[in-house]
Length: 69
Image: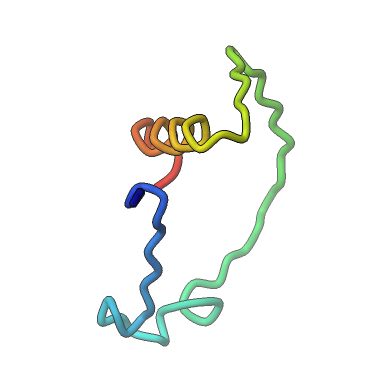
């Protein structure tokens, strides 16, 4: 069974016709001004098994909710 929703594509700078000088550390240096600890509290929990159906359902939900992808 094919599962296209489980396939993550990877593009290179050349694939998107990008400028290598504007990529990576040279193209986007980041300076961290502050770091804060944030504690998330779960509003709900789910128990999953290692079954393909449970894993596929979790991936689909994460994609639909725009949590990944």
